[in-house]
Image (cartoon, rainbow, N blue to C red; front, side, top):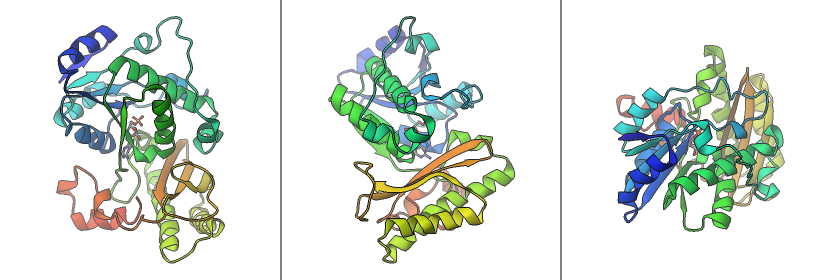
Length: 309
Ligand code: AMP
């Protein structure tokens, strides 16, 4: 694997592979098995795999964790090289945002003003779609990989890509979870021990809602109440806990095969998000396991990752 930092180094590294195609995994670094699963999926394509590591300031609101966001390029580079990445693109700020850069890409507010957009402000998804557009412009990928853990982000990027980069194919990877079901996130590193234990309430809440759906409950308000009770019992208050259509992100009054539950919870100073399918949340027990869990007991992994998808 090589590391490139400038637009011209990137272009030169990609040039010989253009014919076969470029697979792209954008990240903010502090990589974990969720990122790794996307890189591994990308490496099954022909051509070359590029991963970017860039902590994008424009998607953080003032007062959020931009400064303290974990950064460890050396470790990231090792993980990427071990898992099929060919090119690490690790740009400095002025490569992504050269002096005078003044463009912002905004997507349909029906996708961006709700859920995380309503909590973090509409500039959050403008920051995300602008940096992804900028990165797509530099990398010019044929395939780009994003994680279902950030389901709303995928919806926003799909919409942006369809309008501006129709030749890019968006691929998604399922959420990779720790053994107790908590979705892996670079932000989990912020959690103190007791906060980390409490965070397992999040997948428990999603599983309870999914289980109640499987048992026949079809009223979204009742389902939300079931989840809220579980959070309450743990002393947690969600920023949002909502059931929406996974394709349109519209509110769901009728549960169907597209219905998903979306949650954001602040635990201490750490903001965590997750989501799960309501209807087939049950069927994915083994597939939610940790990708490098070959050393972990399959039984414990399956058990703990439970029914959340
Ligand atoms: P980030 O570095 O947090 O911006 O994430 C980079 C990519 O990895 C995004 O497409 C995320 O959705 C994805 N990702 C983050 N966490 C997970 C996870 N636990 N499972 C699968 N993909 C993930």
